[in-house]
Image (cartoon, rainbow, N blue to C red; front, top):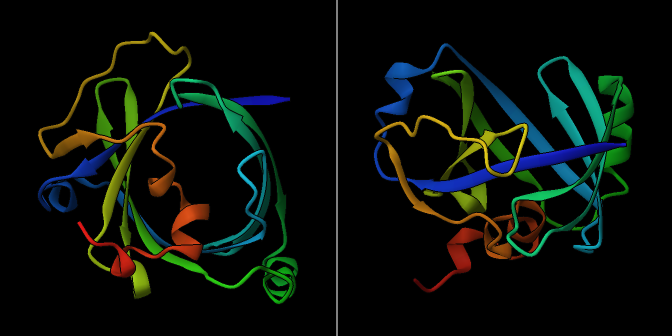
Length: 158
C-alpha cells in the first residue's frame, strides 16, 4: 500500500516552461470521484494507469494511493465508463534541489489554471521552492483534479 505526500501550489508566471526538462500531455477521467475513494483512469503518453486514492489527512498533505500501469488501449476503454468531465493537461517536469516539481497547465474547461505539486517522502521534509510557485493550495478540494472534472475552473467566480 502506498502513501502520497505532496504540497500543491498555484503558479504565478510561466517561467516554469523554460526550466522544464520534459513535458507530456495527460488525459484523465474518474470512475469514482468520491473524495473517500477516488478511482482515476489516466492516459500518459503511451501508457495507461489505474489509480485509487483515499481521503487526505487533516492538513491535506498525505493520503493513501495505489496505482497500476495498464495498456493505453485499456485506459481508452475505461474512459467510456468514466463520470462526465475529463481532465486534459500538459505536465512540465522541473528539477528543484533534490525534488521534481510537476507543473500542470490545464486545457479545455480548466484553461487558465496552472498548478504545481512537489512530492515528498515525509510531511515535514524541506524542499526548495522555485520562484514561480504562488499561493499554497494543499488540501483545498477545489484544486483536486477529481473536483475540477465536475466543477471546471471556467465556472468559478474568483
